[in-house]
Length: 240
Ligand code: SF4
Ligand code: SF4
Ligand code: SF4
Image (cartoon, rainbow, N blue to C red; front, top):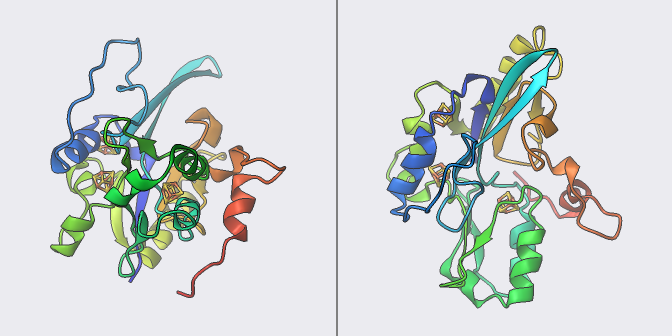
């Protein structure tokens, strides 16, 4: 049964428990950072940070608003990163049949620089990062090892506010729709993002671009006049 996350950003307090837990579970080294005047730290995803709580500050109708967005791979139904990687190195990106998790393997280091760039550029959500040392390209693996042991992803387990939800895809889509209907009255710009195409389904309370440039696949082009969303839609969709 395909799995999915529902990420209800209306509940996120930016405690970063999920970000730290992800690093701990995957035994990833710390990233050297410095105070940059933002709660968002490190400044971006990197080869050793698979989850990043993004932070943005806006003045809206005279009030300061803070928007939090716990960013990670969306585990696309038809992942363009895999489509590109498959054309160069078989097995560099695999999709788990049981859960739908999209997983980068150590074979990603066999991708030549231009192939790796093409593959990472194909991601509509700006997720993959290449480690210049090992040559491996990395990202969230949906905590596949935990799932195989009957456990939920560690970012879900750690989240104290109910922002991070995980379960069967149908159940998560229904929860997203129900929550959207509830908040829409007070937050008319609230939206569920790209639910038909991804398995990490976000609810945002305002226009997506106020959170981050790559919240939705709509915002960026892949060249030749084709948007990333159109590119995604053009890929063959497997039978469910
Ligand atoms: Fe691949 Fe990007 Fe989709 Fe993740 S979000 S599966 S890295 S295309
Ligand atoms: Fe990190 Fe696992 Fe959450 Fe992915 S599912 S962001 S690997 S903790
Ligand atoms: Fe937000 Fe939950 Fe992550 Fe804390 S653990 S930053 S509340 S998603």
